[in-house]
Length: 164
Length: 117
View (cartoon, rainbow over the protein chains, first blue to last red):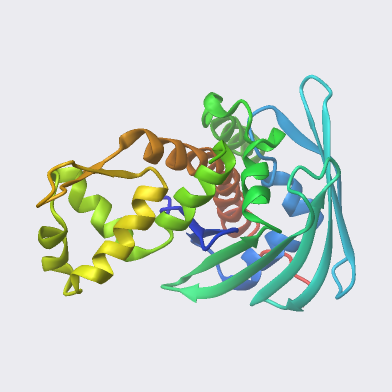
């Protein structure tokens, strides 16, 4: 069973993304902060995968994500960790290489224990209302019609791996 | 207003729960300020202020009838704004479904997940 994803605009320049996961908080936190986990899920739209996924998990440390699509187009992002309260809270500033969001976005992720699972509430504060729209024009939002076929492949791969 | 300014106004208008409730009510049928004020336990001036923001955002229009000036929901602006969020939502839904699968895998096949506390 999958939990309902909540996405809403907040104020003039923020977006809130919240969802619950059927796993303990420290495990969800690990999936958010350890590269070998992050690269298995934070791949965005169909056709993209990680080329670089590095995280220096300390206050002031940086993370660097570079994605590549099947046509070889790359997209990079650098984040700086501002606050780390394991396994409760992560605050960071993020900026895409192409800077289509007109400056850094401040991202706060809160991890709360929720009915045997974990609820993650991510607030992304863009530098302006225009910047929030810039996120729309990003490569991350292109070609999404492909839907969830990728998920099925991942599940198949995992089932296959388990069997072997 | 430019396209960008209009989208800003739309998001600002949608950020308030009372205004979203007003839109939900108007999806059923057009209504006057008095009819809208009733279920919200708010004064007519307060409702009028919300309506002005919704009108500025292009989310509603007001009728010409001088007495009632019925409010009418404008579907196109709403579609534009929710379409933006819909795309954003799709990306995150895709990410999170993969995370669901990963979390399930970590908890079931490895017994105890490897952690470095």
